[in-house]
Image 1 (tube, rainbow, N blue to C red):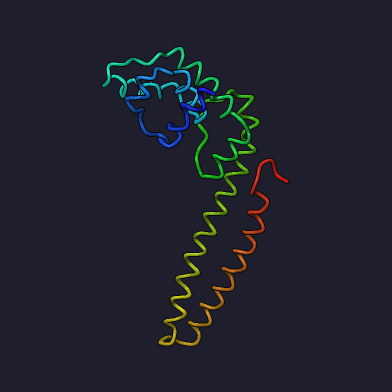
Image 2 (image 1 turned 180 degrees about the vertical axis):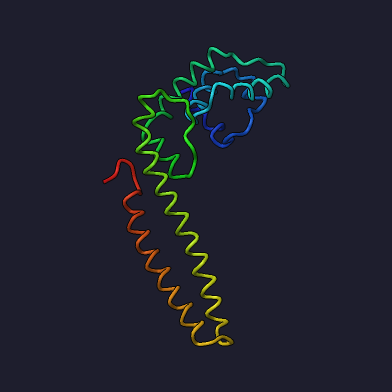
Length: 175
């Protein structure tokens, strides 16, 4: 429970450096656990050392690493791999080989969701641009306006197909 209470303010920090209060709290196991949950490498401790040195504090490497290892048990899971892929992030190579083998299909599943989302966004932009072109087409030839309408239909068809595909990648494990 003490870890959860300490981690709540840290969650808002993302990858920001520690505060003076966090350095002074000396709860290096909790800091390490948070770092492990986020897939941080052992070298990440150097950031904490640099920050806390300003306040005259030295991190406890053993406690931090113990916490990081505990946090890695939460990071090195297929569910976390799926989440990382779905948001377009890379997996940090901090997990044991057996865990990585289990994580890879989940990561690729999430990554596919991300790629579909990105393609849908691009199609939305193209669709909006073409609509603008169509509105301006009164100065264009009939052929040009027909081409724009044809392309708009193509985009809508592709969007429908991508949305069907995306539903298949919307969760882990797959349905």
